[in-house]
Image (cartoon, rainbow, N blue to C red; front, top):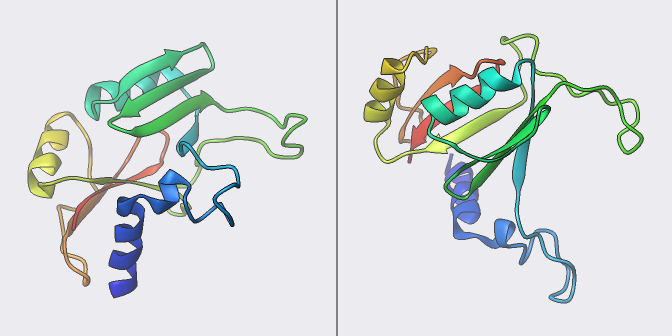
Length: 156
């Protein structure tokens, strides 16, 4: 349990995102300058509307097949599903098909989980459960975005 908080503290303190240790062996090595998440979606307009109107993201760029959204320093690309390409042979990009099995959680740390839960419920977000206290502390609750990506709202 303590390892999770230590890891979250490491991420929050910046070394991984600043590119100072995780991807660099020496100070002269190339540095990571940004980390973004990209989600394949079935309906781009619906996803843009959800992240913008429900969660408060700002649209930075938009094309017919892709959009770059921002919430604070977090950058999120949503893009239409697609077939393999020469630079990723054999890999199709698709949205989740089964909500019972997931490998992706987008976690939003907030200062008041209960208030955020009520605010998002008021905007039509359906949560799996009300906020609960995990064994390591804090408070959290989960919901799905329109394509089935799992969203976690948490506070330490």
